[in-house]
Image 1 (cartoon, rainbow, N blue to C red):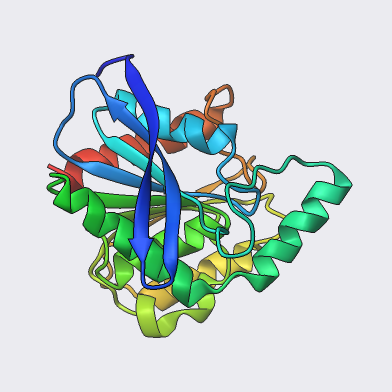
Image 2: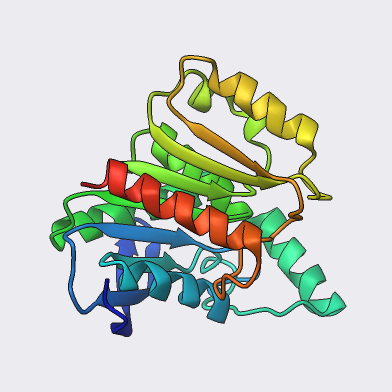
Length: 230
């Protein structure tokens, strides 16, 4: 593991324009890449910090601007007005086009030399990461508190994809009942991992790893990547 990373950005072309992706490059690449999918607040400092975390483990890490069709490179905080604005962007977000953007970025990373690509996402991104892995767009997926996956049986049902999901039992947006439904949708034969954290709420995973739940989730994510991205 190296503590050195290089930050930059790339532009990715699509059928209806191009979007930016924040990029963290490792000092010692392992030949694989991670796509980091944002929450509803944009590609914020926190999202870029996640990219740096993965880059320090040897992965080229890229975080695409998912809201570029509405407003480019937005970075919102947690004030009442900013949360309202973020919720509005989430409502107008075209998921099909967003998933296509993720696929374009994955293909770009592979063209640039990545052997395997894992999609890692948070909240909105957690949902998209799971769908990217289950649909075969990515080699693996790690989803943190991805919402609505219990309604995605057509994509997730019995998936054999390399998939790891993380949920907090104190999440006020995603109930433990919903998490159990996700496990049921995945099916008993699925190789997907679903981890719950008794003391954690929504958006519990922090890049500073100061709490026990974040530390355990990070350990599990690293182990998952080592198993599936070799």
